[in-house]
Image (cartoon, rainbow, N blue to C red; front, side, top):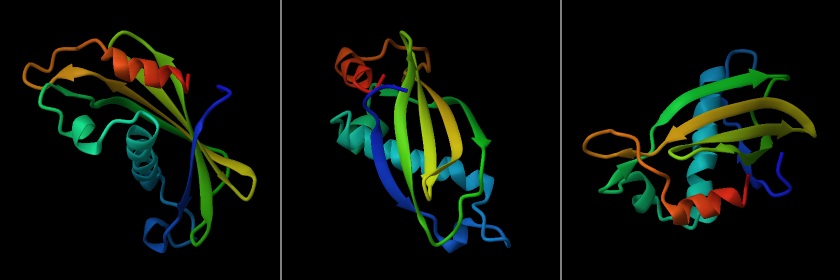
Length: 137
């Protein structure tokens, strides 16, 4: 893990959990993406519209996976630590760690690919974004 990670406190709401009060696994990706959106705006210094509504490019998720070590419980906050695991020419991998009560509960990995909005062909990561990503690599 890099020496610098993007950190955000999030709250686990009741409507995201199952009958046992444990976060439903599918909502893990919703929460990870919520943190990613904050990362784009705050750490990459890119406006939400510039990233998610860019007229030239899109950055879809190519792959997503999660690994669970302990339950994430409703009604409590948890800290999500985001770091960049890998940077390639057209794609980058994001690693998330969900920590609740000082315990690692879940890890998520997403792979994002830069593509031309119209043709959907891969594009090189723009230099100004790549340099910001490298700060969290």
